[in-house]
Image 1 (cartoon, rainbow, N blue to C red):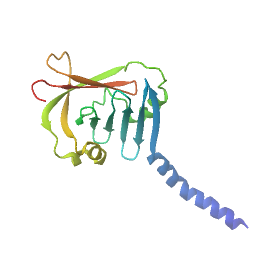
Image 2 (cartoon, rainbow, N blue to C red):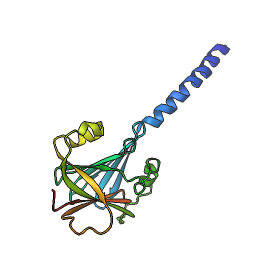
Image 3 (cartoon, one colour):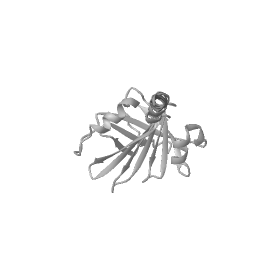
Length: 180
């Protein structure tokens, strides 16, 4: 009579760490309404990757932040292009803060509190696989440029596109008149 109870307790002790590990590695996905459209944030805890995708009538885009490799990639559909850059970890939210950040977004529009500006250069990325499977699958078939962060006043940036991510961070990509 005590054998089934003992078996259940031992089985519980063996499975608890495995189930906890599985729960920590699964994806988290959240849909957030933002000014006439929405953003979908997906977090993969196992690979330390977050992706944020916006769908609106004004245009769609997707950005992937790989906290493991330190690279980010952004696909801008109106331009049919991808941009790859190094993540500025001091300006971007930490990986662990992303779920809380998404939970605090309200249905009203507000400007991001931080902005990172990039200039796009003539260098076209040819080896997408080196940036990981998420970036590869997102950017395959699109012209992919290297984007470098710029600081201070820039007078020759050319046309720019500004993407507001989770009402927290604005990513501004500018075509350098000399290159792209």
